[in-house]
Length: 67
Image (cartoon, rainbow, N blue to C red; front, side, top):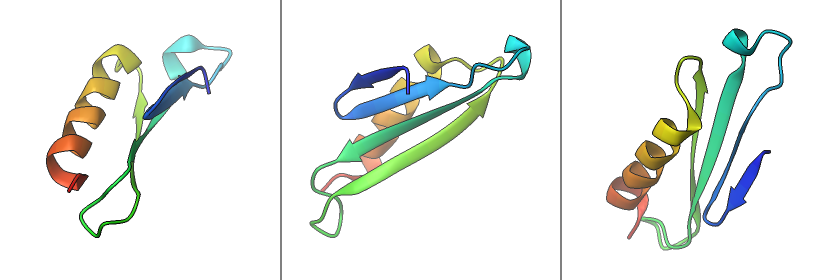
């Protein structure tokens, strides 16, 4: 994990070839649709970057997973 900014945690593998690295992000939703905590998770490969993918994940979680 490279970054932890609640409710988000994200990072990228440190592969020998940066063009083959993979990223992952997790977004925590305190009160999901069932009233319990929920998590949204994504993985992504280059050329996708955390700067683009993390906001998409956060927006998705707010619109579709949050109560």
